[in-house]
Image 1 (cartoon, helix red, strand yellow):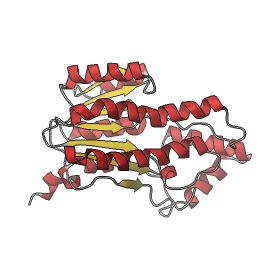
Image 2 (cartoon, one colour):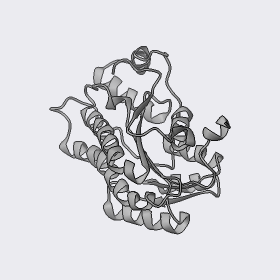
Image 3 (tube, rainbow, N blue to C red):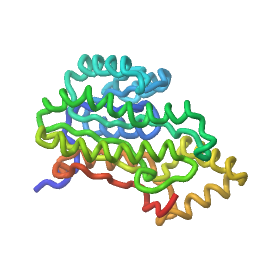
Image 4 (cartoon, rainbow, N blue to C red):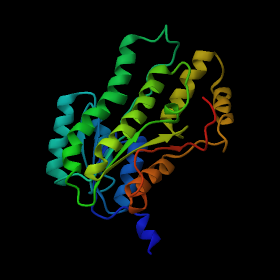
Length: 263
């Protein structure tokens, strides 16, 4: 048996990645392109999409607000035109949401976090499923949750609530869509090295009134491996779930976090 072939998604996969023009999403896009996939990304940042499209001619893009149902429909019009179908949906788009006590969080920020982190994943899944049913080797959906989707996260309640909900959505859709040969899983990144995490740490440090460096040390002390994970490590887990090696895996929440012990 050729195990290396099993570990690589088949060339020619048609992949849609939400929030795919930067950060983890772009790392996932690059990973799929390296295997011969054709990738369409959507992102709220038009400049980021332009930059992503220069990475490879195999990447196309649509500027869209993932929480806007009309924008979502427009994304799928572009997917049909650019890719001619869909094999893999990566529901990656998300925001950090506000930092603060439950009695201090603005209701508008709460609702925005729900809209972007949870409702958008429903909108995209709803549009994608009819296309994924037609995928030659079966369809794949990967929801991007978080380690905050398996642990409590004080002062980040909107974010944690959505990431727990995403796991429930993934596990439920795995049951619902399994008979259609569509596999559904969630990935739970931990503390991912990059500008977004730096912003989260800075906001928490400000909330607690301590220096950034001290806050960062506290975050790392909660990780068994005592380091942040990289975007590429998260992307590799998505490739695995989309490869023949992951063909029997569905309904799972895979933590890629170095074993975050507590938040």
